[in-house]
Every structure is written in C-alpha cells, then in structure tokens.
Amino acid sequence: MTTASTPAGFAFERFDVADAGSIATIFAAKEHRSGLYVLHFANNEAFVGYSDSVAAQFAADRNTWSDVEALDFTPETSDKLEQLTELVTQLTTLRERPSEPDAIGDAPSAKSALPKERAKRATLQNAAVGRSRRQFWELSDHIAYPAIRSIVADYINSSIPDPANTAKYLWQVGALSDQHDEAGPRRLLTLSCGGFETLRIDEIMHDDDAIELDLRINTNVPRDYTDGQLEISNETVSAGRGPYRDERVWSWSIDLGALLEEDVDVDLGIDDDTFDDLAYGLNARLMRSGKSTGAATHNHDLAADLLAEAYRQLSETE
Image 1 (cartoon, rainbow, N blue to C red):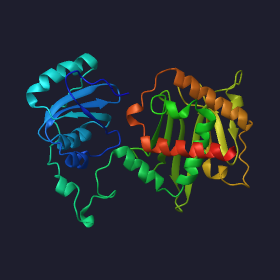
Image 2: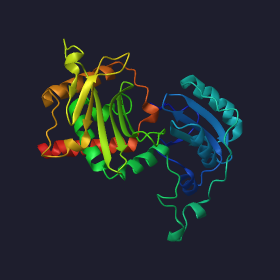
Image 3: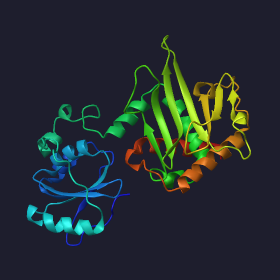
Image 4: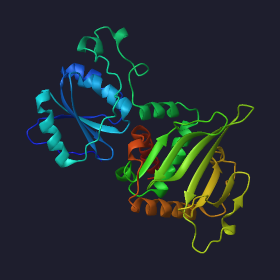
C-alpha cells in the first residue's frame, strides 16, 4: 500500500502509475517538466528525486523498478531536495537508486505528444504501456480467454472472502509468466492467496497443434483423510497430496475444456459444495496469515476484469 502522507510545506500532485508505461503525454499537456518528485512503491518504500525532465526520468525509473505505484510531483527547484528527503524519511523508508541508472531520453512536448493530426497520435499498439497491462492484453486475446475468465470468476465467487476489497493485498492474480520454456507448458494465469499459489492455468501444446488447458487448484485436506484417500484419477481429473513442504494441501489437476462441455462428466470424487468449502478454507486461512508478498506483481487489469465477470455471474443468478 503506497504512502498517502504528503510532506508538510510541499504542494504535490499525485499520479497513479501502477499500470502506466509513461507519464509523458500527461506531463506535456499539463506543461510539467522540471521539479521534485516522490515515487511510492508497493512495499511502502519511497524514492525522492529531482529532474530537469521528470517524465523522461520516470521512464528510466520504470525500467529500473516494476513496483512503482504512485508518483508525487511538485515544480520545486533542486535546492529543496534535501529538505524534502528529510521529510519523506520521517514518513517511510527510502529506497536507493542503483549505482548505474538507465539512460534518460527526451520527454515529448505537448505538440508532439498531443498532435493536431490524427494520423500522428500514439495508439495502444505503439504507446508505452506497463508490463502487467501488456500481459493482460495478450492473455485477453487468447482464444480460450472467455472460458478462462468464466471459470476463474466462478472460483473467486466460491472461494475468496470479500474479493473486491482483498484484491492485491490478500490475494493476487498474474497474467502469463515472464519465464516460458518453449518445450513445456505455458503459464497463462496464476492466483495466489497469502503468498501461496492456489489456482493456475497452464496451456499445453501437443505435436498436432491441439491445445490442452490444465486447471490446477489447491484446497484444504478433509479432516482425518489419509494420503491414499486423496488419490483420484479419471479421464478429466487427477488429484493427490500436494508436493509442498510447508502446506499439506489437496492438489487437483482438471481438464478445463471438459468443465465447459455440457455432455462431459467431470468427476471430482466429492460434491461441488464440499470442494468449494475446501477451497475457501485454504484461501481464507492463507489470507489470515498476513504473509501476502505478491502485491508488487498483482495484475490490476486482469483482477478488474475477473471481478466484473464474477459480479455479472452473481447478477444473473438473482
């Protein structure tokens, strides 16, 4: 959660930059250029600086730090930097810039950032965009995304407490994986509670170009169940004790495509309400632990889309 306090004696304008790839166009329109700025990070740290071109500096800072959530700007001169630094130090922990910062380019003028000719405008395809937003856009373009959104939204409704108000800080969701092995499954979506992965969807490409989507869910283990009783295997579902050292969980692998076919029987071996209770039990316990560490990598756009779908599903049942 970013620091909301404004140091006394300075008039700041705050910009939410969690998903922004650039602030150049906004700054050009407002004729903001040089001044003091404070970056606020997902872990409550901050960085204080001065630049002759804050918009250009932010582009370099964004390349250095992926967890910038807000930027405070004031058109004060560099001689106030020390005073501002001391004030911010009293409010939060300061982060140091790496010894070799990225090169700083030129920020566009209002004339080039907001051209009169429509053909010269920046579009979604060529404008700077934050990495997590770009990953969500790529995922949303996947042929199976409507199905993925429907399944995960239903899971959120069934197994996460107060999802709209606990998103990011107690549960997080990510789109695609930064590391992808061409020979192995491709991670499409990950949902974590309390820093522990509770749902993921992998895409498996077969030699005949057929696509298989594997839905993996971790749940609580029923009281008094032995590891042997957790073993389930059929055409659409396999389950067993999870391969984790710190959590004893029931790990499920489900053919996501089968869930969407009306004439395919997905046999979990337990009834749906029991499954939802076990999933909720694990998620709530993990969220209560206060160990969520993924706020910096939470995908805001994906979460918003999933919550909107979850709300639509609930509205349809009323």
